[in-house]
Length: 501
Image (cartoon, rainbow, N blue to C red; front, side, top):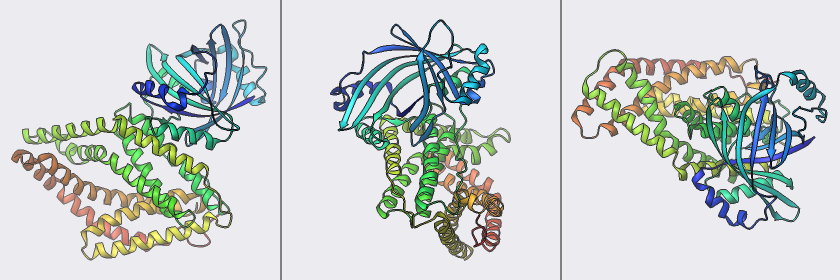
């Protein structure tokens, strides 16, 4: 068994000439000859191998046929490490005897007789051998072609950096050098994953954050790295999907991941180098704001205008207001897909992953201490904002929403430390956030509709009608939110000493 350590990067096809001409690539010696690789992936009719996260393919490389078995990759920030078994493919039959992982071999043998072609990938590969420093060897493989399944096709345009000798940080260093000049972004989805989605004609679901198991003995910086890698994976996956599909949830989840990353940095500021926290909090805030315009338009269309337009016929001015906002939304989506904007986000993903990779541990500080102190601090901020909002400060109601969001994100991050109490508290926070979010959406929507309406009297009238239509509901939500916040922030906190496991 060998183990691949690689970093897969996607780029738009129009950037391929610049990639091939880049000094780091053009000056590197060729590794083998350029060629077209024909790959066929096999599975059972019920896709049993996919469910077990095993891929089986045969590849025609020149005159040779190769059989390859791969298992699921462990990916951190786009850097993937996966077990792989490769051998000649002879006599039109599979041979799994070289697979030296007994469980994998047993699973393969159990389905051998039912394996059939599922999808194919065909791409031209150019490989360069880079040696950026003594002892470091990296293969740079440029792949351009298509994935085909069930009469459908999807393009392949990738740069794979495979580590021959060196460390993961060397892959990141090279990738960041290239990304400084080229629109590269990390791509976690393998060709096999994309092929299965094409075969099943599936629209990928938005990626959401998964729980990260921590204990009171977990070192604080290691806890931060584990949580940050999970959020980075969410951001990367949804970013990639938003670039090619129109589902607004992809943009929303990308923005949520960036906000969670910013909150994570704030909660762990005691455990992290100050410059690290300052630089990345500012950068994540700017990147999240860059996604905001498209998301805000979707929110206003769905939560403020759709409830009115779906109740029955509306006037011409309301129809024009909806159309104008849809046009703005569509323009913002195009802007998000612009090469330069996408390149900036991809560059940030690579640079943050590289920074996480080299973040050194601090054995003297455990996550339990950091978590408790951080959550106490955030709840104190929430109480201060609540007091000022209750006294009539409208701006503090908006701040309260933001602080409670941090509190909820913190509960999500640290839930495994306080499993007995975190769930109920988090549920109450979520309900409160829904109310505060609706209040904020109404205020934001009124501003946005004002921009869209401009000096047009008819559009201005439709905007005013929208605000009045929602006003009673918003007033009720505002009154209830303050009461609910006071009750929640006065209740026992999950992070009280004695709650952790």
